[in-house]
Image (tube, rainbow, N blue to C red; front, side):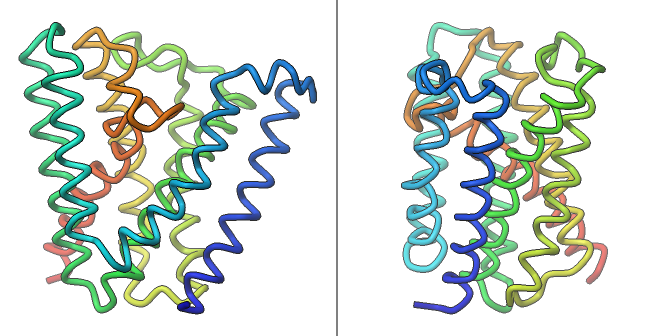
Length: 240
């Protein structure tokens, strides 16, 4: 197995443990309440998700991307077929184009597998950072059209977590990672999450599906990746 995968998995394991302890602390270590919460399921699901990320990045990237797009279409147009059509269509186009740009950027990278796994890991870290910063320091709510349960402090945490996470991953041996790419992950993951929240409210759905238990479906889980795809391609265009 690649040393990079091993080192990054160690980092992911440490973050997983910190995340569990931190979430338990939010529940004042009341294990029964935590076990019954949606967060408990979300945290557990990260274990198979990480395995899927490794397989998708290193061995089945095109299939991985195709499955993301395919399931997002099923979510948008079948699972939520009774919801308003226009916002579903608009979001689906934005999401698929973003995922496509992410895939193109990865394929054109010096080491596509390492870049893919790095971006997936950094976007996941950005979501985790957003959660904790929002819960601990979130005093200024986002507009109701996006999600009043989230805060601007959480958005800043997501931006910072993605950028710092990508820079930290670079030190583990990720080839071709620059400051521009790190900032793309930060801004892209934050914007992708906000756009996803906006269209969920416009469509009047609470989650796209239960295909990824506890994560709100494929649309929720990979919204940060889709947003990052736009910024990555913008950086690529500017630098070339």
